[in-house]
Image (tube, rainbow, N blue to C red; front, side, top):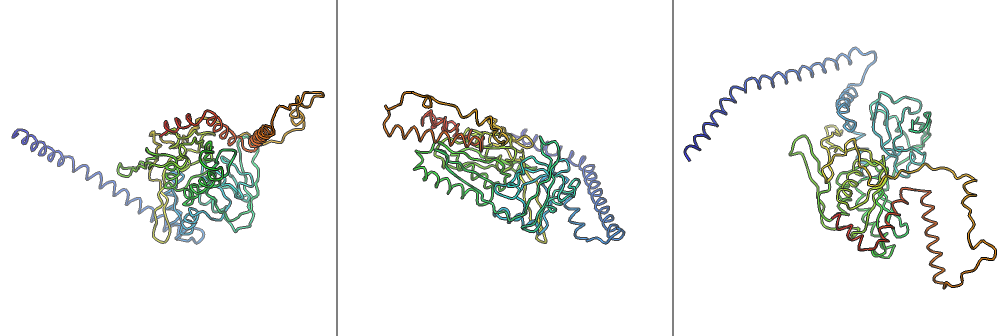
Length: 452
């Protein structure tokens, strides 16, 4: 025991000596680093004063400082920025689900403004703006070289006013102009409907309305079908959903999971990380789920898709998502402004980061471009059937109930065919749920158990 104690004391003494010998150079290096930082700050102050006194025109000192702050933040990544008091208030309003503008979520890539996604039912969506479009000019003025906030400011204006944006789109040989009338954007966080025996939940954003609205509409649609026994599954449509609040993404994921991790965040320091776990309770009661994503599905949408995919609770269908795997924290600043700073990356339950990679669907299904049917194709479709042949035998072996059932099934099949023309990806998702339903409830229950 005495030897152990002595060894411990000796180790501590040697450590103290080593610290004394190393501390001097370390302290000197730290002091030199701080001196260099102060020199740079002095340089900034010198440049600031020269601009104020010698620039060809008089400048606004506050605007200069804001520009310098924003430049510092935007040099970090595309999602960090300074929010002026007006911008900070606009962001708070947006998370409540109503704001003015065109209705597009944008980022910056190679100096141009890139559309992450148009928002359903907004002027930009109605004008045909698509995820992945590049905006090169606003009312004839180039946005190349502008900060993202500056480009966004160009697109702002009074409700009812017209704006012309120049768009470069993959697959189009030349840039083209799109005229849009600005409007007040009232976000409907969730839209729902019934397609056959399937409940379709369309999530357009993750505002503070999203989870409660989804929960209520899910219950309404299930009731419309006469109860959960009559539901063959759910489609969670996250296409062109640019994201939003992390807390809402966690609640939406939790709605369909009984247990396990939903998402984890890891910051610069280990203590900055966080982990979110599911609580018991599945709103879908184990029914199969298909999640639809595309290149406009970003951030919070990717958290939900990744969580349900990793837990095998849902089949993810569509095309690769946007790939925004970072978390921004909005920090209030003096003077009513705020700073949006990237503070962490998020990871799906399996530990994968989707930053710049996106969520890859389990089944890749692209949305074919809409096109008008030619007269030749219409003629080809008008085939003749047995009943059209002269002298064909009639079928008088069916009861009225059997005939009615056949007609109802035929009408349902024709409606499904119409949906494939209107929205091929959604029709594909519904077909998957029909297939799972045809295999029987035991298979669906086994699928749910495998996921949870």
